[in-house]
Length: 113
Length: 116
Image (cartoon, rainbow over all chains, first blue to last red; front, side, top):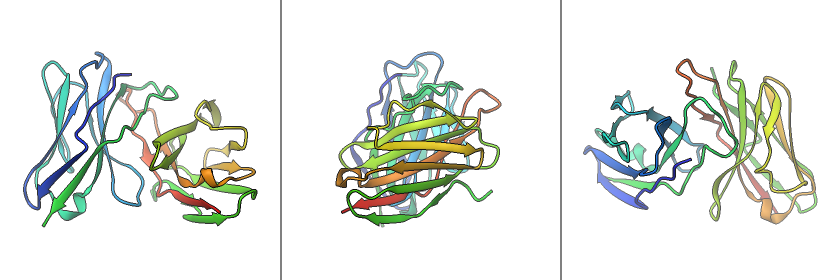
């Protein structure tokens, strides 16, 4: 599976958009980009996923570059409750192979009042 | 649905004791995963099941760890004997093979295990 790189930490002002980048330069054509987050003392929470088109749901938007080597998760109006560690994961769609859902260190997002 | 349910939420035990963690996946999900999270190693996949059958247990740290899934609505992770280095948060997750061939894992709240 492709590896991802994310900044260790980011700050964002409450009410502003939080843009979290992820590099996945070795992504394969059949690999999706997933985003999860983990709020302190809770289990990881699914946010969004995509293959090559931009995606939007009630939680966030996912922008994937045309070459698919990077993506950005956008929280349009960050709140204090969005403070969490955000994980970017790439994996082959529909194939659950032992270790391929790999959570790296992620980005620790702090939303500041 | 209530989501993935884990019990207990917290467990404190002494070294050498047997520990059993429990998980109820989301109804209808055919995959179940056990993860362990520590500060040092992050989130690690231990084992996963498909239709109650263990598929890959290569992440299980050693023979002291065992997992079972006797039916579609229940799984256990057992540590016998427990050691202080087993102290961690253990998560259970479940997923279902999706319509588009993609799957999303839904995690439980975790069990925080402390072995003294």
